[in-house]
Image 1: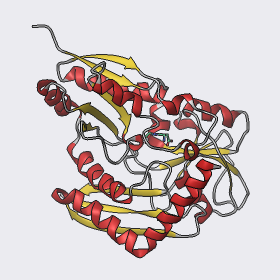
Image 2 (image 1 turned 90 degrees about the horizontal axis):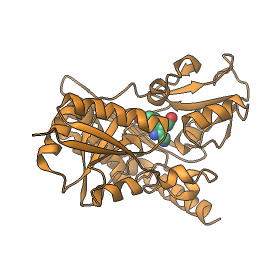
Image 3 (image 1 turned 60 degrees about the vertical axis):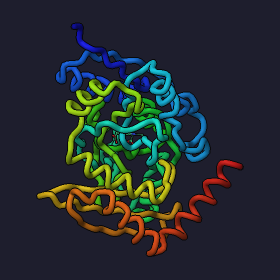
Image 4 (image 1 turned 90 degrees about the vertical axis):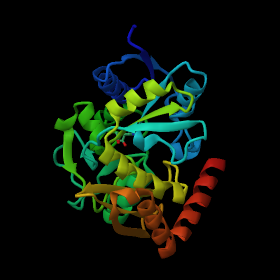
Length: 316
Ligand SMILES: NCc1[nH]cc(CCC(=O)O)c1CC(=O)O
């Protein structure tokens, strides 16, 4: 019998391809034959609008999900961070890969740039979370909207459209840009986005059960999965898309799952952060608990304000 083929759908950016080849190598080790199929998404095509204007729901995932449904691909590979918190009924996540270091980093070609030196450096980022945190912790810093894949952002940095950019360490490292990191940002201040650093494998529920099992066994990292279950339960309760500045980071140690997370207003003025612990079997409960406590502590008001502001931006 010939080796079964697994068709892996991915976006075409260099980081997306790194992730797809990473999954391909894990699947090969599991005894299946991978084939990579590149699919362009709306988020890749529309580069002249900020993500908060496009509307975040599935901008980087919708076309891949269509491929899963019509069976042109078996699995879709995403940065776990880019995946919406609740999937349609007919789709599921069958694996989360072992997480890379989760923090954000400051990247610049000028080693002098620092968030803390009091200079009004201009930082390029399009993440509402990073902008709000900069406003909160480093109010003297200026920001400019900066979209595009990692290579595009580095080019804009080189063209001096800003002094530095903030990126996830995971992506910077995967693209071999470590030499341009000028600072690692603290997890307490810049708590990462839900899912940052892990790669998610998505499939349709109609996927062949034998393939599903081998893909899951070869790609899934159980302790990362427990952390992401907790973080995604939090995100799901807050119904936050990737343009809402909510954040959460769970870690697992000695079967104890710890989560810290919260929400920040777009202007950075109101920041709510909480942390809780439970056993690793209670991942979803832990995420729900964080959500309830954050909402109760004023997060509900902040969330409501953010949603109406983003709606105005989209209409305007
Ligand atoms: N939103 C884009 C995105 N999605 C995943 C990563 C980085 C890799 C990861 O977190 O897995 C990035 C770029 C960034 O935020 O710097």
